[in-house]
Image 1 (spheres, rainbow, N blue to C red):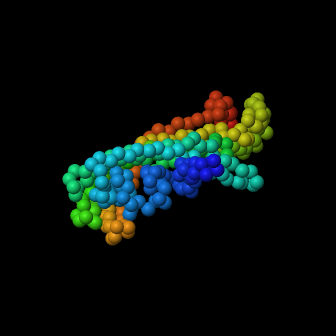
Image 2: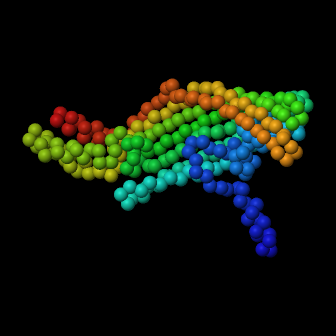
Image 3: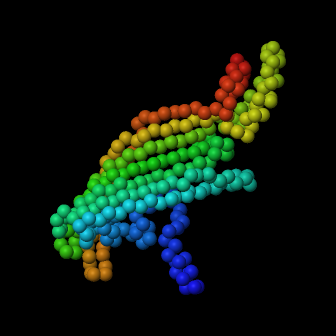
Length: 277
């Protein structure tokens, strides 16, 4: 019974692992993740087209299909003056789909779809760094046709075309928690101008919350890149691989901006009262 429990626990180990990464999400292949991201010299069948397209030349099947999805839970924390703040993120789900096929004995091709980059971080609207970011999200998608030519039994070369697109959003506070405190000085001179307005009480409402925030979002233009690779079987047990992936600059040419107020009517009223001063 104990042996069965131990074996079951071992089998579950590949299902979850922890990594420290930024926006590069290395979840384009379960095989690749399990082998420590050394796919440039691994024969991953159809999945090779992402890591080294030359690997397609070593496919031993007429057609090879592979698909998968992962759940990524991004966590971050920050301590300021003894106060700890934690991000509150929804899980992201990077996925991949690969289809490889033999054209001739020495020529193979394929097409893939995956999400090689993307992540999200939500700090909330009132944390101390809200003037820099409240929440941010980046998504990137890649469609890649690839082809591989097996020059000799032990040598294969390959190339792929990366068609990439995505979207981006960023929220940050424009009037952060406590940013209106400088207006308290105006409260003392309002009666001198015959203005009856309880400015002090109004300002108390925004000591600890962001009064106004902005959200910027947009879609990137479609950009194209490429990857190249070569793979050589030195012996039956040793394989060498080299792979190059070009840079792809994705820009957001236009988008939308949305202003969000905690209490739009009250804030505009407050500003209109103090604006003459």
